[in-house]
Image 1: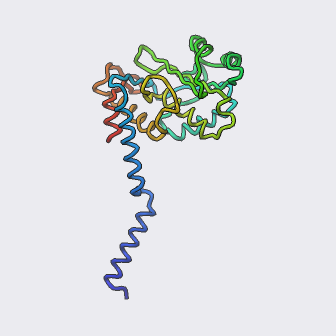
Image 2: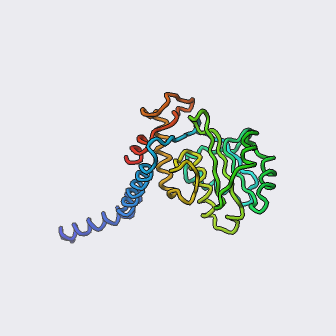
Length: 247
């Protein structure tokens, strides 16, 4: 028969094994990592100018297109949808596109872009802009347009195939996912997009989630008292987003 002391040892070991194998219980390493990620997100947000305007979309749904998909950017977008879940908001454009991702050959950039734009569903003014837009030397460029300096309204991602042709999918995802996060509302330090300078995807995800929580709740410090049919308010404050991330 098992002694009481032996029973205590058996019970302790059994519970330890059960808890360590039950994924509903985070490990100490996971807890430490989660806290470090939150701290990094808060520190990034606090490094931004206090008056930084953060533009969200007025709807939860954003029609997008992929033009001249030589790099299989469509697969990268599917991975982004899985990464961001309901927050991604992307669905294929059947009429006007609000987000356009265009891959073009850097060796024949102007010609390639002009050809791509003939099949784009962007409105004409944005096509004219893209045709002459400056592109980053790292091959990953994003532009965000606003309506009334209040809402995000149109986004464009330009990918130079020469920079990513021989790279792994993780490298392409690094560009495309960071650019989509930027268009979703992730704030940058100087308003310009440079994907290699942004925090990693986990940190960006925390910030975007907090941003739309503030937009949905109606941030009391937001500049405008306006709410869309989807229940979103514009220009969530940096203070609200920091508070949400830190919770």
